[in-house]
Length: 234
Image 1 (cartoon, rainbow, N blue to C red):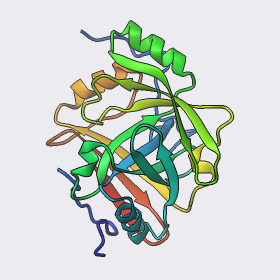
Image 2 (tube, rainbow, N blue to C red):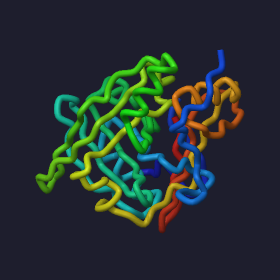
Image 3 (tube, rainbow, N blue to C red):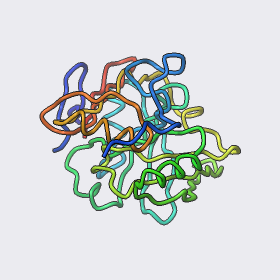
Image 4 (tube, rainbow, N blue to C red):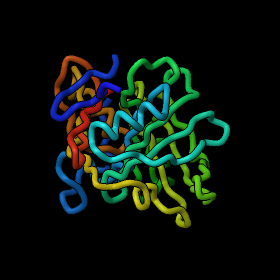
């Protein structure tokens, strides 16, 4: 199979002010590289065929993601690759319509793990941001163990450019802990044609993160592995 991603080559895979919330998730130098938000939990790569997505990432980085399991009631299954401490790549394949129609894998979303998801719900309510949750979620791993979490999803996530919030159950092992490793998330960029407006939106949902100017809004990341790099975009 020809590579979907190649080393140091980018492929476009697709096409009134409020105070900064008290739980703002800045890129803390003690916890993360300046180019990656400290509390970024995972990024999601959507594809219409899971095997193809796994092979593409392995070919680019030299590390093969492991099958994660099935999301009950959602018709999706995934594969996972650790990107460091409490951070991972999730490759997700059908059954969401926007995934089934993809001709090439691309980023479709990202998640952050706040210190307290109840505080997130409170702050969003106070800032009059529409959302759902906290909702319970679970997934059964191939070894039979069940992972549990709670999520908050924004009513308008700007097509996946804004994240959802996830809080893992205390009795669940974070996926980054025991899936294939040796890859790093070197940077995570948020780009917008109007970075000031997008920064304001991020602050209203509790995220104090830089936004770069670009011709259009998109996410842009670089995963480095022992073989090479995978540049991913929305």
